[in-house]
Image 1 (tube, rainbow, N blue to C red):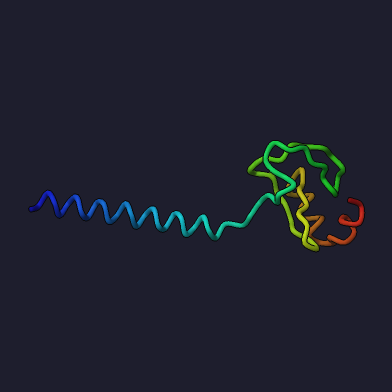
Image 2: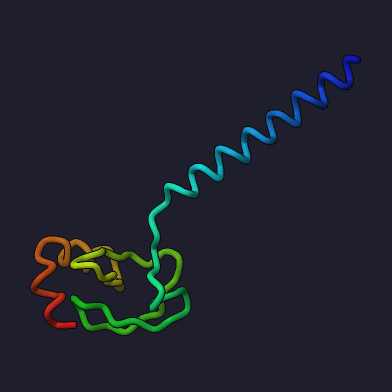
Length: 89
């Protein structure tokens, strides 16, 4: 009886953890649109540097489009005046 109770408690805890993890993933922002994906080459709209997109690549969304950056400094510059840099693309 004790063993069954322990198994049920452990199973419930595992199910609760899985549900929590799934709910957190559902809230995560989409970091790549359909045109861009990890491993794809991109050009930074601020510096003009070419780089390969990966999971840590910073990005911003402006006017319904995603813009990817070579570094966080370029993202900050873009976010201050996105129209200036979006016009270059």
